Length: 174
Image (cartoon, rainbow, N blue to C red; front, top):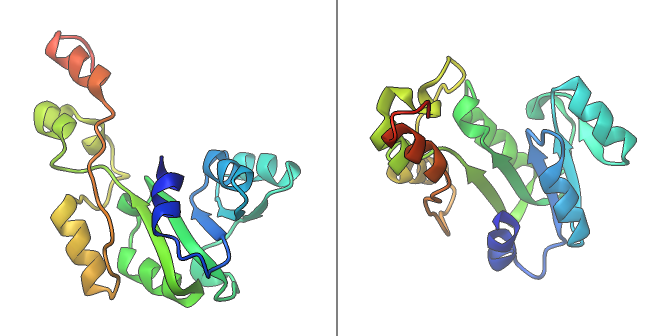
């Protein structure tokens, strides 16, 4: 679904080259490659990055600002990563250095005002532990991107946690 959105806004004149920051076990870059994208990833988990490297993927094990990447990408994606960053503003600055003019940034974050967070409140996964350093809703993310010189082309809240809500409303462990 994310790749469909990216393809909808991707400029035809740009080559299809994508960098997925925080690529995990590579599900998104694998799909992108199947759809004729040149797809690379940044992943710090050594187990995941070793598996992907053995499968032939180009994986980087360093911070974006420490890599010497060229301004060569038409899309940068971050799936459930942006809320974990200690300096998201700096990350956007680093992305500008490698994103081609007219390129896209695809960001997926939990919507702090989404239904699951509104119903479960402090029991929602978004509030579990200490790893979520930033909380966004549609307006705060959109405004943050605009203040950092990005145009927002599309946004939506995807409803994915019906089972979690159902468990909670049935007095079970969410």
